[in-house]
Length: 422
Image (cartoon, rainbow, N blue to C red; front, side, top):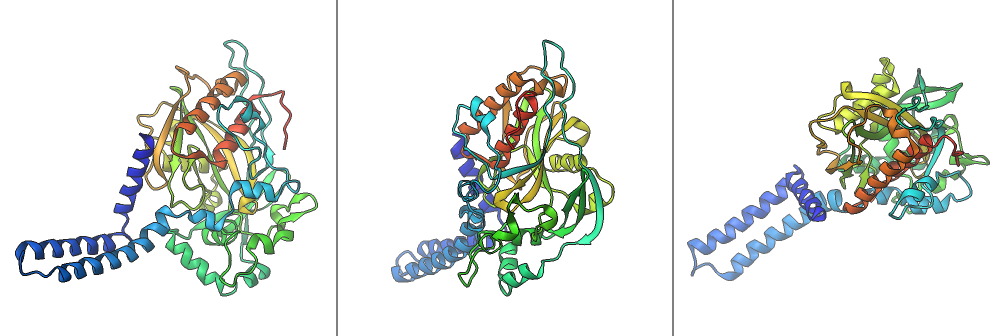
């Protein structure tokens, strides 16, 4: 039943798309003209004329709708730009310390990949185990300090030379996919526990991090192939300071409510990355202007949550635990901050329609959660993750890389005695 509901929502999104309306209008008008001709002139109207009208209408509408709809909603646009997580993991096996969801596999009833195309840069320490009714101390999440620098990222000469006239093709693709260029925060270096931020744009990240495996028009090497040595060194991934790519900072997390529900989302086919997967509760990009104005990473995480969960407000949050700063290897090392948000009970678990077909409200089997520390009890965390994966398995889509990463990091933070594998 859920699969048919997802297909219905896909169709509804297609029919509501402004780009598709001209083609649908032409198709409708052609049908009206043909039917009207047959009704008004049932004997006089030659079948050849009606056939010609229908043929011309169908040809035009079909060609237009194929461009406006199929390319945008049904084809896997992300996979044209970015290799599959499995292919990326195989490519960098032995070169990069990839995140192994080994803890998730011990509690999962569903199949879980051996590795994820993720490398942890800063990972939270586990909190002490919870005993009896004592919730124990708060879990030790990471606390990122941010300092804004004056720099603005520009394509290095080597990257601009690689693109050449191809940059115009990328800009056209960027606009065709319905993306908008905005100013983003780029971690240019990490020093003494402080993340230094400079300005970049979403388009520059799209060209580099989000299109590394797109074949150029001349059939030459992809960005990932051409810049392998600028992406990797003898120690694995090059530092953010040495990376020639845009690397804007993103973030997301799991939202769990006090009445015992975890919120997930089924991501649409026309998002930039993570299409047609079960995503975490929220995810997005940190805005440069907000960090420059003094916003903390936790503020940006809560802003993203308020934009993607309809009834959630930042004032509903009781705790934000930042689990890890990671770098997505499939996105050429783009950094993401993974977090865990514990919030008050919400009136509705509906999702905003721009990013998601539907939402998943996972009942964690807990009547009432009084404090976030309860969720970091190893037994409770394992049971919650098992329920989340079971709900994901029943959906129409596979769990996304970010969701699996967050579940693994949650379990690691909950298990104080488990050594880090990254």
